Length: 393
Image 1 (cartoon, rainbow, N blue to C red):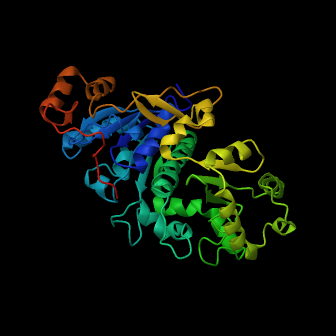
Image 2 (cartoon, rainbow, N blue to C red):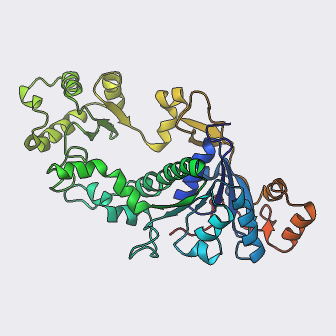
Image 3 (cartoon, rainbow, N blue to C red):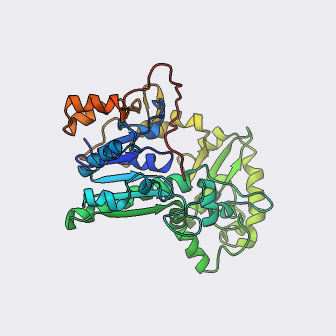
């Protein structure tokens, strides 16, 4: 069930952006087979690993490598998130895989990309977005740079961009019969997300200190403010009609406020609004502004989101086996996504997957006996609720 029903994806186990990409494809109906390492541990609470089938293969053994190639032969997509050269050393590089399956779209998820001075250097989201200019842009005058969790590099500029690239590759492969390699680097993706900032820069904006511009906290009308109960609200009336209503709701009738885009006034206006918002609690501001055309929302703590009436009405969050998590998105009117199933135990589907790919029972048993494949974690193995399969870039 789902828009991508019939699409087969092979995912080499890793962390962060590659599993997120695979989750997105699986949420929309793709069959995703996650190839785990022998040392993989229990990951049933890892939301990123939902909607998969799980097989454990020792790809370092020749028979294991050949088994992976057998799976790839019948797949549409391969996803891997290792440093450049790792898949080649396993004998599973693009040349070998595309020889096995010329229609394969081979997705490579890294931080720095497949070439360049940093290509083989270790890093994480915070490093990639710092080099791209994101972290600096989120600074405030006199404060250290801030990083927005790992949303911009790992997920927005990484896994989500890879999913987009993979589907573009599949679309092209269906018409030409030829696959290709998708080189998705988080430093590139984070830069892509800054497209509007480069527009501002070309217009002579974004030239001064961060935290002084329209969208980075400089404008008084696009900001967050503390309330009487030490919580926060967000306001964003960028357009004149919303800004006028915003002033009206706040009881501000000074004509000097109407020159909304006079940047010289922004610092003092921020201070004035900060003092004003501290006069009421967050709930009181919500009662006044929630239904108004002023571009307003409370700043909710993570634990508060699930109880918000709008989030509830849309079922933006769902609970599966006691784990609250985001529902599949976006939503489709005709080919709705199924309710996700939680992550499988590593290797839980090994035998069923091999049988489905035409392996006889005797051969499957031999692969188990020789340690080429494995099933669920053996008794006594250390368990964890976090995947430890694969080190990222």
